[in-house]
Image (cartoon, rainbow, N blue to C red):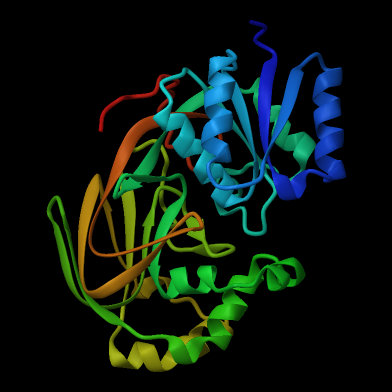
Length: 307
């Protein structure tokens, strides 16, 4: 098979995106054999990845938002094929791609086809994979309840706007988290468990996260009464709340909460009151620039099969 051959798995909503069409044609003009397939409903990502691997493709392109990237990354980890992934960010937030330094211009993003792939970590909880971040509490509700129309008008800022307008629904819950040499318990407002650094349209919940260190970055926003009463002012006034977070970097963490915790995995909702999150080191090969902010410097191209 030609090494300059790749398959683009494109979210169905982007089928008429002229910038994507032009970018694909430009790569073909450079000598790339670039095929395109569209997703339409649940399960399409897994099916298309399986078909691509069976057809001998070793380079796949995920065209869509964070949810599309997650679906394709998960499908690739479930398939035993030797494939690598290029990110073509086309969503509203594009949180993982932005933090990784991937261009939002389709032609620039597809230049990553010519860059060597690097083995990166993934996160896992309850048998589900996440590429970027799991958010819980306030952050997950904001993301889950932000309308598509508002996203089109405000972009990533829509998530923050929705959070402020739904402030009256905010409440805390008692939780316990423990991992290797780490234990925290108390009332929490929000929780971020990051492989990547940001969620909710640019909110830096795990600002030091790396995707090649074998660890998840844990960020807990505690809920003392005075913080609950001033959170709206802190957010709307642009004041930083970074120093209020409790942070840790762990290979795994278990969470127990007093009531069902709503979790958002790169746009995929789940709920539970006893969850174990773990890092899957070097589980996926992704084409990222050597100076990507999410890389720690370890030059590794081979994925690991450690669980």
